[in-house]
Image (tube, rainbow, N blue to C red):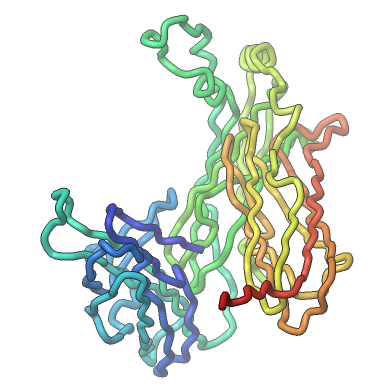
Length: 421
């Protein structure tokens, strides 16, 4: 899923575009419609009328997950020429919103997934009193699925490599000006890393998750390492780099590594690649001497520790959990909602699976939909999180921890404010 963010901002105008991404399904040679809403979010009296310009642009995603826009990025699966809409320019008053109706016309020979972006520019010609030109833009991704047949996901692991820890930086100088690396950077250098590149060779996009398993020479499992990427969705023809980090030291010896990816296939197929590497006696000695198990105390921190919501019947809202990886290893979270006393369908996890890079934090969103005919009262549930950290699995060690987040939803009557006479 792509979230196309504001490219530049200013102090006297604001803009919101919804949705930031959407899927459109269309048959070959047929048409389909979709819409997006543009809002001038600034309601202050000094805000001036703003001209909004809308256009369709190509974009691509680099193997590292960076999104780039521009006509020079046109590709074989571009949907730019398929999308039409009116108007392409209009005026928004402060606080005003406008819905843009768009139409997709798919060629008869189209097959699979295609994409483009609706670029929305909000700005006034000229400059305001402080001499800053108003120029705000954002984009909404449009992903088009041409439903011709059932598709089988096709993927391949283009590359897989290991990066051994380095221990060159042993001294930390007292004066800041003399520091060559920070303490954290030095710790990261002294970690074991895996890089793997996954390629989408098919016609449809998929969500990918990966893991690397390390085995000793006799094929006994030695370590398990979740793989992280900034964007899990990989589009046809694109590739994506995944990274895994483990701070725990490996004993000396020869190892086999198997990298495998689950590409969201309904058939449960996995893509794998094997390689071998060795850890020398000297490296193992330095690694073990340098290692301090700073990850042992608490791998992740989750805030808040419980969700307490007060809502009214018919309400749609969301709740957020901030999950912080406090370790120098990659971690993977799998979330499961146990309704207990909550009716089915009231809560939905937007992303039940999350992988975090070292020292990374991310919001997990829980969508809350309360039916209009919901009975007043208190409802309870539990969010279960299984956290897997990169680490050794030998000698019966486990790298999986468990967290529970209690959920309480109070459904109450709407507040009625009496009008003063």
